[in-house]
Length: 294
Image (cartoon, rainbow, N blue to C red):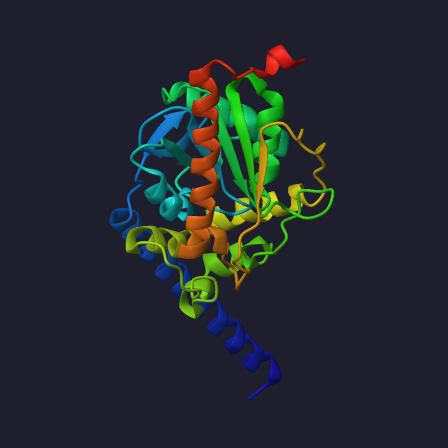
């Protein structure tokens, strides 16, 4: 057999395997979409719809910002611990989770406007306690600086290290190769990004695993990683800012403060304390809005 014929057969086998893998990926994704519907609401912010899931009651509302590549279902443990006396909202940034990507490429500076529009159109009035985990602390801080009158407090959970928005741990999902591997089904077959165990309820855990194997989600994760690697932001003011350092340590591709029960309890305790402090000050008349301070 000639070398050319051998190479041709190898190429044909690779093409067949890629097509079979892509078919498997498409069928599995379609089944997941029926099995794992969005738990919240899809709200239009103009050119696209964003997913937001709110539970509990009371003011101020806690707004939860996930780290790069994180999705709203990752906050399930924290939200369960906060309700029913505290209202909390977790959402998916454009292109992540259940949210549409829209027509505009990812720009960190546009996230605050997207979130503000989402909260207004979803009928979730301020003020808000912004809570960001990892590189999500960057987005939370940016919102607080852009909309100070709508911000009651800022909670930074294991904030990203250094002067940039680069997360303290680098998820595999951020690799530019990951979307291509997902398209031909290799990530799903190998289970490389979905193997890490979590304490999340089955539905939330299933959603987390599903999105970690979808090419559209992974494409936006890679875009976020690249953009945040060079993002800079002035550190937040000490006023009404609380930093929470969890006892959890990163494992694999997961953010443990969101998916570990003990760390989630620590985060929820800190958020309850911040909300209680704001409510006490507001009820006593000692709360001073940000505009009055300037």
